[in-house]
Image (cartoon, helix red, strand yellow):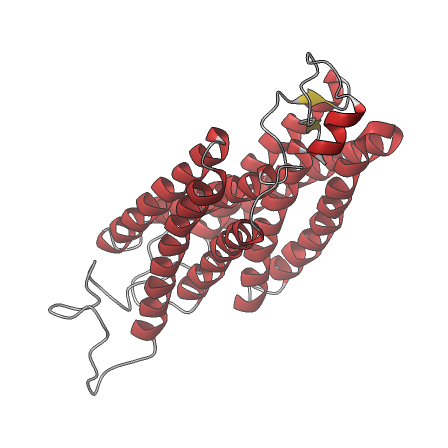
Length: 311
């Protein structure tokens, strides 16, 4: 395992937690109808970056402004992660590349948030906003896992067919997430309590398509759990896929419950948090199908003296 400062891992973990938390607060903005609580961007109101107290003031500006403040914290921690990698692992170019990518996309996400407000919370921009967050969560998970690995070439731990099955599972998860955002963009929670902007799709039909994709996803996850259980070299990945299985079942219960109960806000928020957890789990499950040994597979094994020094 590469030797780095414990502060590096703490900062990378904080980055991942905040990338998930901003999804939750963003969902809270939409579910409370506070998306246009701050009707302009980057200011909250004309002439002010913060909500202005007046007689007609509601709670909506404070919820939206709180989400904007958290997005600034997310950006600051993403920048801190770049500094931390440069400080303690500057010779590890893959990690630095991931950290820079996360910072760049986080900045772009802030701009997309402004576009979302300026377009009146059009469902396409809201959908893109959520999917970019899922991308950031996946990259942040990969960066956190990479901190514990060397930079030697990756060696597959499972047969090619299992790796292909894992990649197919990841692709289907993307389809599930996209259809889930279309369901949201066709349902009642637009983000604006007064003038909801919606897709013109039938919510029931889109919900069925989303459920079908989820069933396919769960079937693939079951296959991955079985495959990694039968392979002795996949012990690390087995835990990840087992967690994905449990989260998927919980997501199914929440999804059907919210569909049958008229999409209550609390369950929708839990469902969004579950989507973030699935993104983390599948990312970890995929990456652990490979390992990066301390010594490249093409290199000579370490002698006893060298091994003692390396340890």
